[in-house]
Image (cartoon, rainbow, N blue to C red; front, side, top):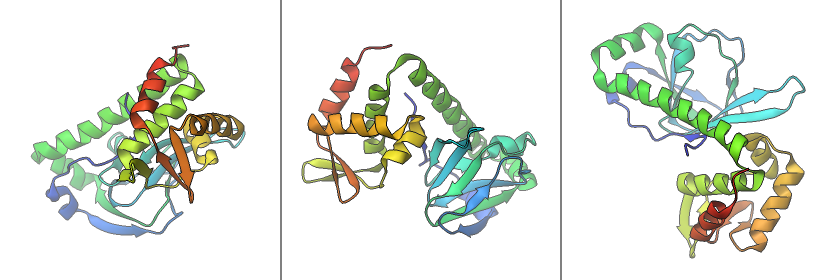
Length: 222
């Protein structure tokens, strides 16, 4: 399964040095639907959400983009306007690169070409995994999968537990998985009762990662 959390790709220093480092304050919208994309974005430090809204105004988080991620690369390469929002959810430093400069680097640097291909491929497989989750797994399996993925991306070993060093709310979980808040509260309460997870001072802790993985594995396919 490919996660919706994208980051930590190795990138050539050439790409970083060829661009301009730009600061985005927390809660700044970086790109909006319909916007013409004229630059390449690489997250040097920070966190960006890719967000889509339904006609009814319901929010859906498509990707969480971390340090080392790039975004809107396909829109830039194929001259396609942005179709989702990209928002910095913490103070972020992002490298900007013009399309001409990016094309020059792709043509002359194999590492950068592979880096772009890796990003596009990860996003494709991540999207396919999301479709598979919806088709073949129930909501409880998907919430378990989210906590397992976050443990691997944000987990810090502490006092025989794994602390998720990223505060998430029931609403955030709902926006990421496309479920309502009441459902997420009900399932999280169940997982707490089974001693798989705990919440302390707003942070989630995975108390038994192996147990959570085994419980998820026992869940039947739809």
